[in-house]
Amino acid sequence: MFTGIITDIGTVRSVERRGDVRLSIDTSYDVEGIDMGASISCSGVCLTVVEKGPGWFAVNVSEESLDRSTLSRLLDGNQAPGARLNLERSLRAGDEMGGHIVSGHVDGIGIIAEIEGIGDSKRFVFEIPDNLLPFVAEKGSVAVDGISLTVNRTTDRGFEVNIIPHTQAITTLGGAGEGDKVNIEIDMLARYVARLQEARYTGAQKPEN
Image (cartoon, rainbow, N blue to C red; front, side, top):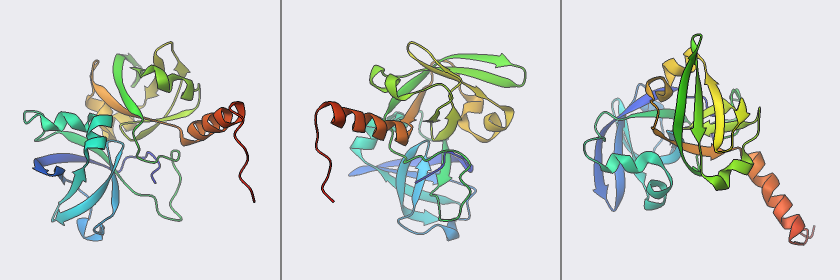
């Protein structure tokens, strides 16, 4: 479980095929303090640490994760080395909840349709798959490449947000451009509300106590 508050930008050092895809990622984290089997959000994808060394860790990426996320671009050898990923270690009991509840399970891939400078901030417009549109609400939360963001307003094809200078500086959105693809995770609360509504209208019975 995560909060969408990015704490490091990692850099891909290598990509290998070992059944699944194995990514080795350089990081400024104190790797000695990361347990084997720990969960780390890598641009919004929850992945498990399977190997580590001084200043780096490795994770396996399943075919499902590749199909669902922009990590598939790393299979292109020209894009992999040096690719930058937003990193967040998993939430611990007692940590400050600075963003919103993020699971690290990507729902779909969006596209940056427009970037406009507004003062020191930037207005980003994202287009997302049609099936995700009902789950995004004005002033609600959404995770983009693992970053917890507040929706300014919705559009017919997606939503827009403001990216302040701090967020530009500590996440990959600072170097993003129009046409770039991003991982989208809808608000978990919206997902469960929709499921409850579906159950209500299909006549699903309440669970017995």
